[in-house]
Length: 368
Ligand SMILES: Nc1ncnc2c1ncn2[C@@H]1O[C@H](COP(=O)(O)OP(=O)(O)O)[C@@H](O)[C@H]1O
Ligand SMILES: [Mg+2]
Image (cartoon, rainbow, N blue to C red):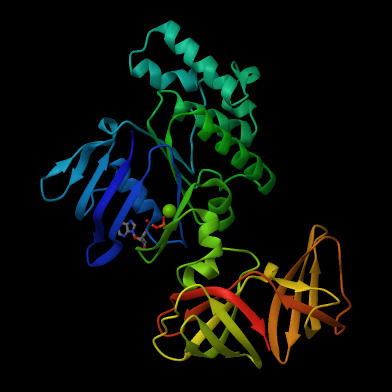
């Protein structure tokens, strides 16, 4: 059971805190992404779990075995942690064939020839690169090389596979295809995947759970759709989703589970499932663009400020009493600029406490 547990893990470089008291349980067989902007501590976290970086404080265990403990002076080297790596720059050995590249690590582990051949062929099949067995890396496309690199990493059957932005060198189309492959691969192996990315869409689509960080501090650690629907704070809400959530400053009069909200020239009544705990009156109202439904029978009127039709969907910027709202409409629709449309708010809105940035309630918002 390669469960990974981080307890109070901190990494300082001099006085600078790169990772701040991180507590994390990565379940067996999970596909975790470490997500956040550049410099937030993703790579440092990954490297600490892998044994490539020594934490300043805390402890880490993999599969029930303590691999690092600052107080007890335990620090196992990477090769004793039964883990595999796939980094952004996955240099294949240019003078070796695809077969040899994948077999090389197994030869070092002193596997016998037959076992190596069986394992290499299994991986060639799994990654659908059988036909390239005898080719050299220079005779392969970027995507094919990437598959060889993945096969090479998977060859010894690591219990945990670490990937640090492995797709960022690929073009958009190939990246999409490799995401699909990685997800299948996760199902086809028994490994736990720990994946670093700054791309929210990658985290959304790939992982079983997202660990989102900002300046070394964990912000939220939940399944991606849950993070999308109920972001813990303004940072997470803004980071997840494209186009981004609408954020409108306002004030709220709270009565138990409900609040009268005044925001950006609009008034609404907000209803949540639980009582709303606000520190003051100042709020930020968060509304996902796809929860604004444009329809002739909508209760509210708006003027179309701009539209961005992409064929599959159209992003519409609305002007409502001087407040701009972004809406997304599915399908190949378009609206003339400055025309009047009607709309409703559907599904949910989020109330954030402006003072703390925290999500204080998720509920329905009815415009008055
Ligand atoms: N060896 C190092 N010495 C000093 N600072 C470092 C070192 N490695 C990383 N950092 C700093 O720690 C922070 C987190 O880095 P990193 O984990 O690489 O971020 P990410 O992978 O999220 O972009 C950054 O501000 C970076 O500059
Ligand atoms: Mg990094």
